[in-house]
Length: 605
Image 1: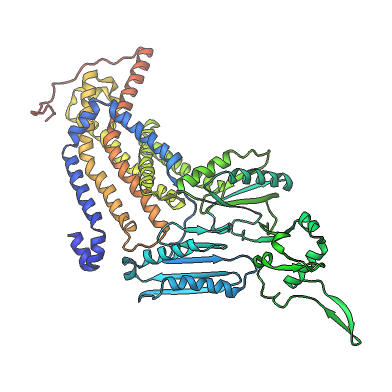
Image 2 (image 1 turned 135 degrees about the horizontal axis):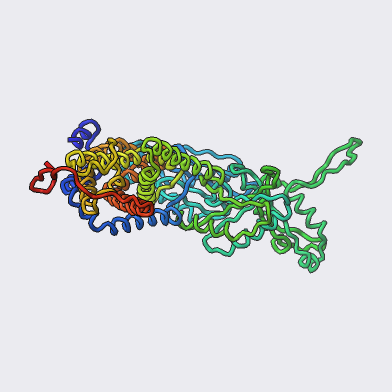
């Protein structure tokens, strides 16, 4: 019915896209119904063989810790969801005429001609750079054009050289060329008090990076996180031996290069009685590109023509554009492109950070992309710990106990294991929005555990009220804990606790499933994407963490919390009986009054 209603409200194409969600929900409802039918028998089986649910829970928690440390992608603060676009950015060498950059971009424009209806393209050229943005309307997103255009642009980029090209959209970013900085996917920041020592540390780190075949375009910058880091300087290295072989001097070659570039020093001269400011340059000095210099020839004093490429070499190297200080410390950044999966990239960055030997007072941190800084990480972790502490304080006040809140708080690692599993399976980044979702998750998960534990205590009270033989051995309070049964004979208290747990689980199962199920159903629309829009907003990871934690905690609370209550209660019995024996105050196990009549199943009538 829900699927038919959705198809009528939207359209059949959208309904067909989300049909797997409805089918999965239907299958889940069937499984839940089967579980609810046999929950009392399953709980009794778990109590009989209590060790295997405990081992299963320990394995699940350990698996969650392993996924968090080694497999889950860590992210930082959220980004707004990008519009569905295909982007091309190219950058030619510094000094390139804007016309050449524009003509280069026209080659990319021709690759997508003719442009179909529903697709818009905009290009911009400035300095030595050019930018293209292609946007698709909703109906065009379901066609072959986005992937077709992307493949054509990448194939053209593979045929070009001598420039930086970046293509993004509908897949992993494509990079080619020697530009670093903002387009690089790896960035670390090193801070220290001595700029020379800091420079030495950076040089050693860059040397390590250069030995990895997956690392490209290692750059050293001094700017802040979002400063430009693609500024280069072009050096002319003169081969003095080649000059000596051709009887040339450095001044002759430098003077020729100055006139070739139109930067010769001007001088003053009297011409026809007037003081004139003169400067010599070649006719095409205003249009020449830096990379064309080495192809020119010069004539020596002896009339011999020599190619400049035999005399000089052009070398391009990055330049630190600013000197930054953070908390009275110098700061430098190293960025590079890592070719590989995001997990491989993060693992490699961790290895690089671990291998940097820092003097006292120096720091290094990963600031690539949307990675959390150490301060942000500490603040978010402190928020989660405070949430758990406040929950414990509230439970201790309400239960008037310390052990029961600890038992209830075991539901938190049950939920966290599911959170790590769902982020690992989906490949999503565990960013700040996901951590904020944990705060919402903790409150709901703890409520389910409270409902179940409280039901166990109510069942114990009701069963003792029905069977008055042992009422004189327990406190006269509305809710009896399982530990309060320690004065009863061993067989009686074990049977009473077993029945209370099994019946309490069956009775409370519906409310737990309703609480978790309705919450998951309410969060699912945040995950259903009716378009193939690129990127994620803050709500998607928040919903993902809440859904994963609720799903795992619901299963584990219903399956393992009764066993944990059983184990904790037996441990409490052992402590209470041992303390009573030490004090010499063991109770007399003498029932009062006749036993209550029993039904065919052995329960009091």
